[in-house]
Length: 394
Image 1 (cartoon, rainbow, N blue to C red):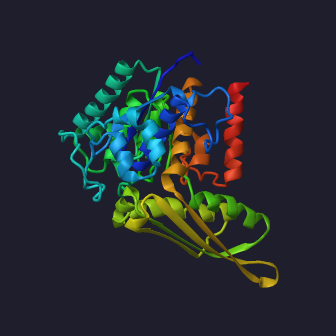
Image 2 (cartoon, rainbow, N blue to C red):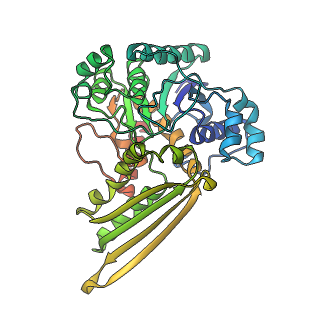
């Protein structure tokens, strides 16, 4: 790794709570005001340093990140004061967005272009300008935008790379804004991370294109709190032959993500990724697996995830486990975003394009190269990831 290398991070949804938390954390590290606590791969050798990261990106809101941080209330006053000067100097670029795909995402900081090809060209121009102005050695695009409604993945426009190109030419409605950012990143040679539940680089057409271009892509939907706990507990139940008779999960949160998920179409995308994990781990369908996500404004970013688990053991005896996980959602997510940036840069350095299966550790619905079912158990995912990192350091 070249000394003083600079790694650009272009974030879709730069003004959101997760992004501002991640940026503030890195800026505080640069000042010596924060350490690497809470970063799961701080001990990994050979990855780009956290302090080499340089941030920019797009958002439907144009406020600089210091103002955004004040709104989100994730950081305390001391942290905002320390990171404030750096955050004030970062304002989002106008975003490519469409309320047809995400009804509750409102803002005025928007790109005034209509055609899909023109939108892609605008995104690509932003990436090239960022790379040139900042003298970047690497550039990663990260999707932290609001959850889009789920598209029909069987449509020809999303099936092949060639079909996607033709669909761009005719402004096909099957292509969402999230896919445009992914396409622009891949065609510009920038690794792409989808931390959202939205369909983006994991659609067959874009996975094929990433493979062709040798560009690493990773996703989707960051595994931070409740689902992380499921991928820890479910393997333990299976190993002890405890049958899960039912699992009730509910979440309340009041941040912008929660407001977006108050729309049924966006909510369905999120619930799909949260609900698919359990059956795959256990090896059978849990008939009463309920997942609820409710927007509750007073809670802000302080999410509460509550689980009731009904089990059946030896001699048919019944038992219950209850878990109440209370945490700031963005404090759980931001460290994972930073690690993913470092890891996809490493994958590109090794010449490993296409879906990065070893990064399933970070996601609720990990992308696989051949569309096969991914591994969900957290301990196995971590083992695969650690072995991959060690192979590069050897």
